[in-house]
Length: 396
Image (cartoon, rainbow, N blue to C red; front, side, top):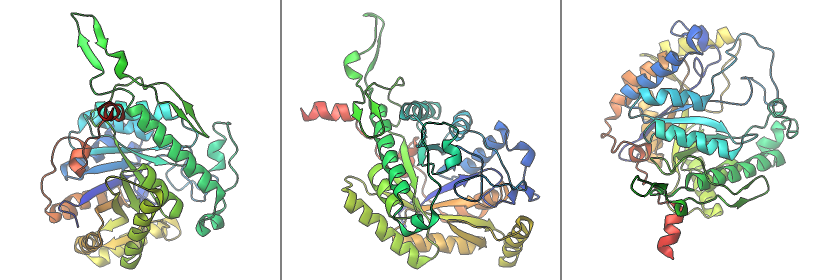
């Protein structure tokens, strides 16, 4: 494990178990209120969690890929993740805020300016989890393109043309967004009242991007934000997403089910970095765990069984489902750290209950050193990047 393991918490509705809203600790009447999200973020911050991610999508939650289901016994509906992060920013001071913003159907200019605004609102604690949309029903909300039915078998084989297309587009989106984040140099704002010059127009540059999906030439309307480049975090499960992360992200969340797979996935991530020619700092790799935490194994198992019974079937997850004690979860975090993982992203099965258990039982036992600096980059040990235009001037 690194000197200071990164602890991220993934926030989604009433929790990551579909029956979580029926748990006695749940607050289903508050899911669509600012106070609910404020309380979760502040609880995570008090616990010294490094960052929270906020889930989002362009359609209602659904069990099957490719289309909505007819279930009425699960949470349906959500608030916009970027806006949640923006209204949580002023009432927190240290924790990183990383909303999910979809790359498919979404204009890079709007993504860039929204995240820059979040970085200003949070004083340098913004991040971004890009996510593709492969659902035909989500495409129908926009009417700009037709997305074919989701082919789960092709995805599992790793030869899905749709997956490659969507992630190829996502690479371009991230590139355009990063260019827009750098379009204002750090000293572009002068504020010289004597001369009447507020900006130095020579230090504002267009994105000048031409690609298959976008042609973006102008500059952002938002000056370069406190971090320069907010951190980009990707969730990846197989080859194409690993390559996307290696090309475009700073952190990657991965989903091993056991120690052997954890080692194998880490190797795949590093191979993807080599194939894509990644330079500079390697990806920070965080393992994902859906957690049901109780003081005894029996109590944790009983809690998960109760949720599964209310749902009508065992919870299905792309990540490891962990129902156990704090000591066992700490052992898992340490084991993955010994393999070379930089930390974990924990998905509380029940909110706020499992987040409270993480705050009380997990983070304090890691005995981590105090986080340096004020920004999310500082907290995770990333340097603030130089503006690409400034670098070009120095090189010239």
